[in-house]
Length: 186
Image (tube, rainbow, N blue to C red; front, side, top):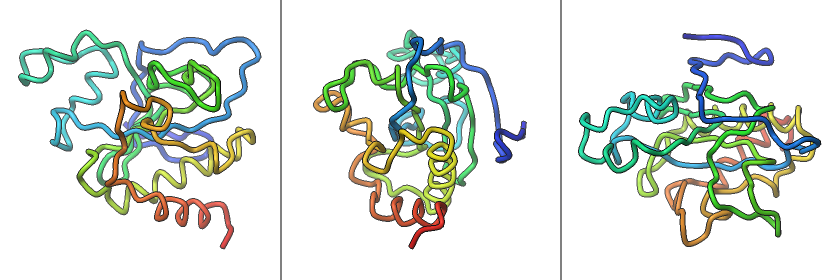
């Protein structure tokens, strides 16, 4: 299902029940980049969508039984081909960061946007993913000016020792070049 969001094309939208209202007066000021694949190391299936909508069948894959109880979401998922799937509106709190801290502030879900890239820590992310991520982040930054380039972080940066994603396969320099192009800067 395709729809428009803020004048931008979104390839799929499914409202995740795993969201709630941000705390009153909270300003969105952080983007957290994640990596995910379900089943682990496999791409293109419906596992991510089913996890974020609480419809994951624990019998569909041996790994699913260990995570079917989780209640998690992200604002967006970017598939290997660059397709953008939306699960939580940016003005709402997605449940993506878990126990987290950024510059002395805990509970990063309160003030962040979570974007999942379909991938693994060891598998290079696709060029189309970087292009879509850069466009999505540039648009987010234009709507939330408190998000600056130094406030775009990995999940591992806000949950060290607990999370590793998006991992060494994510090319930060490539992403920042794409972001600069999207923002009209050399």
